[in-house]
Image (cartoon, rainbow, N blue to C red; front, side, top):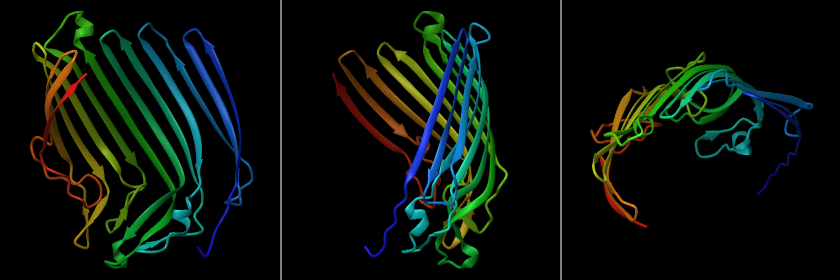
Length: 287
């Protein structure tokens, strides 16, 4: 080694919890000073609250802030097609969330809305407008605001009906995210600007006959961003996957067969690496 660097992190924490009947509040703050930047002590508060306003209903909300220092890799790694920026600024985030939960025997549901305000988000980007041999560069995105919603519903028919049922469990969930900063057509983002715009997941656990069970899972997702292919940027395409697992379950052993990507779809999930097609395996477990 021909060079080195040290930095010291000093932090102070304070937290207080209030627990009342049907209401909880947790608030805290952290004071941070890091010798790796020129900032004085900075304070990052956070608060989480929940209120059970009815027997099966709970409302919750939170506000949290955070700091992330750039790693030495992001600051100094400038070999093998990478070009780091030693003047990167720390990354800061403010996160807001509000949601409602419904919990009753056999049914669990939740809906939440969130908003993130990021400052100086650290990312690695590749700009093909500079040529096919353009390096990956570490950069700060000045401001990136993210808004999204998540919702899920889980139904246990055995628990709800108090008896065995053909459909043992059914789960459906959906997530949506939108950012106000878009990636340029010739720019590939490795972290900050690549995200799932839509994601749908549905799962069913079925009791076929006696100890024979079938689990079916469906996923559809739409990723924002680009990936490099043959020197050009290509936008991600939405895709769907179907997985299934058939098993014979007893108290002492299990025999199963499962298949991932049952429809043998061709897709790219992250980067320019094609994901495998249908993948089948079988096995046994003895207790």
